[in-house]
Image 1 (cartoon, rainbow, N blue to C red):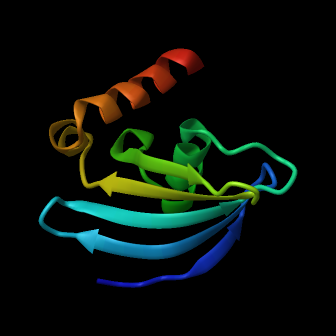
Image 2: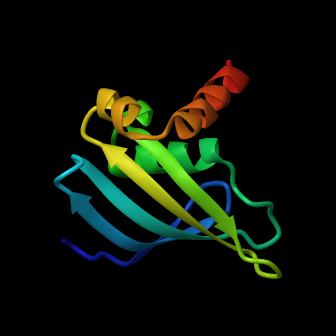
Length: 111
């Protein structure tokens, strides 16, 4: 289990801190806890978070599942829990159906 803490600036003006980064060998996925500062901006959506993670970790966007996004009331800070699977098929097999549907809706909106 590796712990990493680093701050990254996104192009859109978001500041992201990777609070926790570990590999879950039982489920063949990397799990991230990230904190997003978005001063003067709205809470980032799943698509924005997935695109950032895909670029930063150089992985296919289909392997990324944004499990949870929680904004803190009164703060411009959001916490997100993200899974990066070794293969897209694993994500389809392991994640809950409602989580998979959320990500499919996102793909339909962008096309």
